[in-house]
Length: 295
Image 1 (cartoon, rainbow, N blue to C red):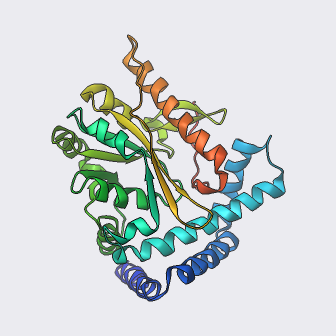
Image 2 (cartoon, rainbow, N blue to C red):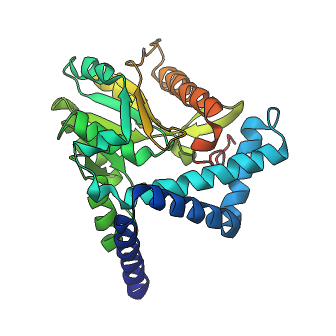
Image 3 (cartoon, rainbow, N blue to C red):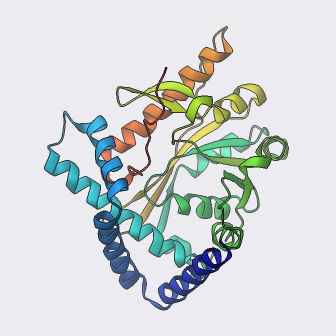
């Protein structure tokens, strides 16, 4: 296990060194090649992605079109990797050469309430850039809840890249206490909340099929009064990025807490569904999104 961990760390360091020597255009081209290779080699993930695409778009796209979207999504992941490995070269000044933000005033309005803010971030476009750019917009006030990698040495490296430009990561195992404290300090908390939540999730309609969704963002919003926003990073045809920050979400409240969690979580995911329908190749299809089903 130690040898495997060390190999993974060395591979990351070598890849990072190579990509940081390359011009961005060349790095992205290499990323596309890695994406194409992954599409061929990672057969199980390709199968999951195609199955997911058929759930969402069987009535809209032919099998050939679905395969094209699937390949393009793998290429996008390769580009994401290339950009991630070049993160240390980004500064609060030059990041604006590749990222535009729409809706910064919405984040200001949310934080202006003094209760912090909860940001729902999907695995869409280059989602890693969302944390970086938010750290530039509100320095030292953005936290993100993430899983830790099994390889502790690799985890330290990856977290260093993710926390570049002031974002702070909170390990999921310590999330409750640190999240509540951060909201009390009027910070923003990012949740990557679009993946399968297993048996502990709440079932919502997503592309016409039940999907298990994470409860915690909506529970936090309902219990603390913190506004919740949807934010998405969209890769443009010229490989620039548009980060859209939606207006604070209008939570509908009834006399049933469980109903409110489910109903409003579903409404949030409908926003994501709308973005996916517009940019179908930019979502993380290789995750087994509909794995958990109602018994």
